[in-house]
Length: 225
Image 1 (spheres, rainbow, N blue to C red):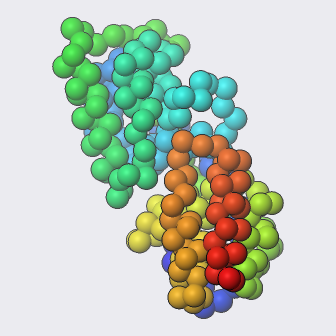
Image 2: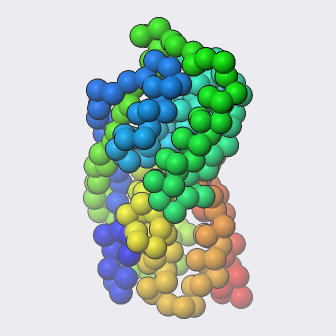
């Protein structure tokens, strides 16, 4: 399974935080952004797509990843910002696939532009990578039905760790909830199917928690009937 829980045993609820780590690499133009994307560590791509969920954001919510935000506010290239903003990282099997998609989008835009716009140093893009810090909440679930009770009040860091970050940690690219339910019994397949329909991107963690809570209530009701 993608988390720390034994499939045959209870589910240990974890919390987490993302620690931002400077790489020292920066970009002052679209060409430099593209150049750095070719070789930057995968953790930078992960942080710039998912890190915003765990840190306060005051940017325009329509640009949900840091690359799109920079193109909008620093490069003032809304065409590129909009193209990058619709990229859903869950559509890709791994971060390398996501990296290649970003490079292709930028290459297409560079072909359309007469020159690559440079921005002042104070507006340059800083490549940040992240390290996840896992915390033990002390909460343990013994039965699958307890999920529908605990998820509505789970810390947002727990939602991130078990439903989002688990996909990176798991060879099957699945969340911890489904991995645990599958290990418990085939009886919970309808619940797993319902959770599989929840896209964790393009929403806040609060919205994601609410959607998961609704999905679990509906799925467990169907299982009982």
